[in-house]
Image 1 (cartoon, helix red, strand yellow):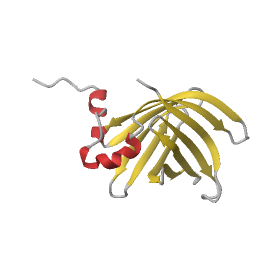
Image 2 (cartoon, one colour):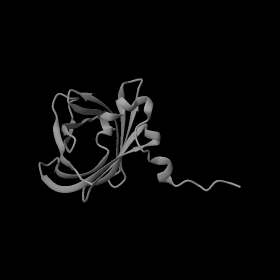
Image 3 (tube, one colour):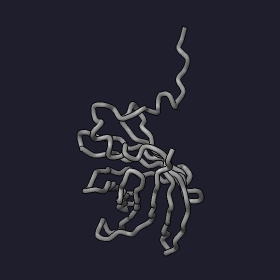
Image 4 (cartoon, helix red, strand yellow):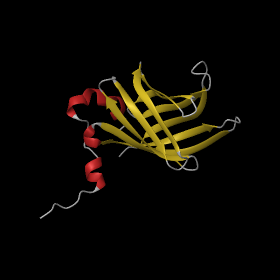
Length: 166
C-alpha cells in the first residue's frame, strides 16, 4: 500500500525556524505574518504612482527559509524566497515576478538597525532594497537602483507596511 500524496502546502510551509539557525532566522522571520502597504512607485520619466497592496510572509522549507508574496495590483505580483547561508553569514534573496517577468538575486544582511539587500540586474545595473524603521508592527521598504555602480541611487519604490492584526 502506498502513502497518500502530500499536498504542496504540507511540504512547503513550516511552523517556525529550523532550530540550528533559529537565532539567525529572526532577521527576516520577524516579518512572518500579513501586512498592508501604502506604496509609491517612481517611473523613469519622473511620474509618481500611489497604490495599496498586501504582503504575506511565512516559514518554508523546513524552517530554513522565509517566503513572502507581495501584491500591488496594477504594478506587480511576485514572491521572494529568502534563504540563510551560514557560510556567508548572509541571505540569498530570490525575487520572481511572473507578471512583469522580473527576476533578481541579491544578498541581504543586517546593517545597523536596517536590512539591506544588494544585487545587480542582467544589464549590470546595481539594485539595493532596504528594510528600515523596523518595528514589530511596521516597516519601511525602499527599492533603489544605481546606473553608476553605487555612486548615486534613484528610488524606484517606497512602501510603508503595517501588520494586519489577527
